[in-house]
Length: 163
Ligand code: MG
Image 1 (cartoon, rainbow, N blue to C red):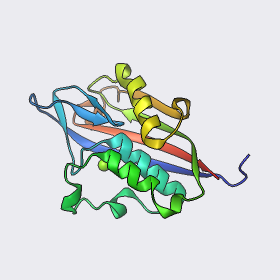
Image 2 (cartoon, rainbow, N blue to C red):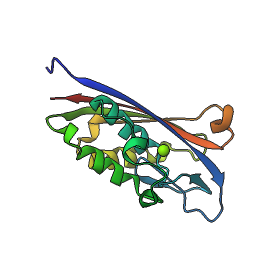
Image 3 (cartoon, rainbow, N blue to C red):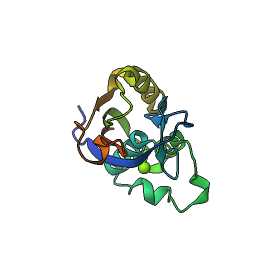
Image 4 (cartoon, rainbow, N blue to C red):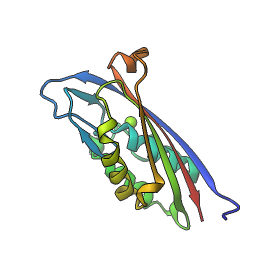
């Protein structure tokens, strides 16, 4: 048992707009088909952004915005999987491994229940973990606030690091 584990928390929210031409939205690295698109500088994957922030928090290594400023044209439309790879490759990660990660997706539309297995598989691939160490939970916002009004999607994440 690691006597000195590190835990990190992450949160992200992005605006959602109706767009009948959209192929869908990216969540946890999975394209979820729907007639909405995310307003974001990168691909807007709130789940991967929250997980990256959780990882950076556990490392005491700042946040995603410091590492990948949204003022940088190089990150426009960027696949957020690239951010995951870059964070995992930070020198601060040396000597640490992820014990587990857990994700809350707070999304009114589209419904995510059918996509959770694919999301867990994709997270396992991106973070080099067994699937049973990747938690994905999804809930609506019960119709409340901007998320409930289909104007945003959000994610919360925690990551535990051990030596
Ligand atoms: Mg974000």
